[in-house]
Image (cartoon, rainbow, N blue to C red):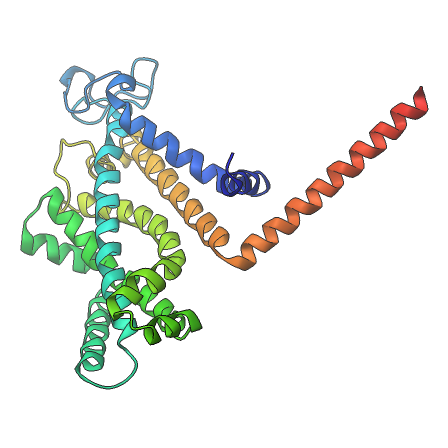
Length: 315
C-alpha cells in the first residue's frame, strides 16, 4: 500500500466520522449506479390501484399519490441529483480557479491588468450580493427549465467562491522565493501560474469541492421543489418531496419524509468528506493526526510488551 493511502486509511480509523462520510457517499453512488438491479419497480410507472400505500414488504417506502414506488424512485434520484451537482460544481471550480489565479497574479502593481482584476472582483461582489436561491431561479427562468440550465445555474452561483479562494491563495504564493526564481529565470507568467502557483493553491479548492457538491444537491432539490428544476415524473429528491408535501397534513408522511431523509444523509456525507479533505490538506491537521497515530502505536507497543512479560512470567 502506498504511504499516502496508508496514512489516509489510518487517519480514518482515528476519525471515524470522516469514514462515515465516505461510506455514505460510496453507498449512494453504488445505489445510483446499480439502480436498475436494486430497484424493485420502475421509477416512472404509476399504478393507480396502489396510490398512497404505507410502507410495507411490497413497497418498502410506500407509494406516492399516483402509485409510484418511493423506494425505487429514491434509488434512481441520485442519478439526476449527483450528476447535476457534480457537473455544476466541477464547471464552477474550473472557471473560478482559472479566473482567480489570473486575478490574483495580476492584482499587484500597475497597468490595465490590475484594473481588469479589480473589475472582475467587483463583478464577483455583485453576483454574491444576490440571494443565491433567488439568483438561481432567475437564471432558470431566463434560460429555460432543463437539466443543463440547472447545471449552469449551480456553476454560475458557485464560481465566485472558487475565484476568491484561488485569488487569496495566489496572493500569498506569488511572493514565495521559488516563484520569484522562476520569474528571474525568464519563465512566462502563464507557465509560472500553471506550474508553480496553481498546484500549490489547490488544497482549499479541493476541500470546497465536496462541500459544494452537497450544496449543489440541495440547490437542485430546492429548484425542483418550487417547480423550477427537474420536471416530474423524473425521479429527483426535490420533486418527490414537493409531490408528497401536500399529503403530509392528511397523515401520509412517507412520500416526503423518505426522499427528504435520503437527501439529508447524502448532503451530510459530502460535508464530512469536505471536512476530512480540509484537515488532511492542512499541515497542522496532518501533524495532529500523525501525533495521535504515534501515541496509539506507543500504547499498542506497551500493551504488547506487558502481555509478553506476563506470558513469560507465567511459564
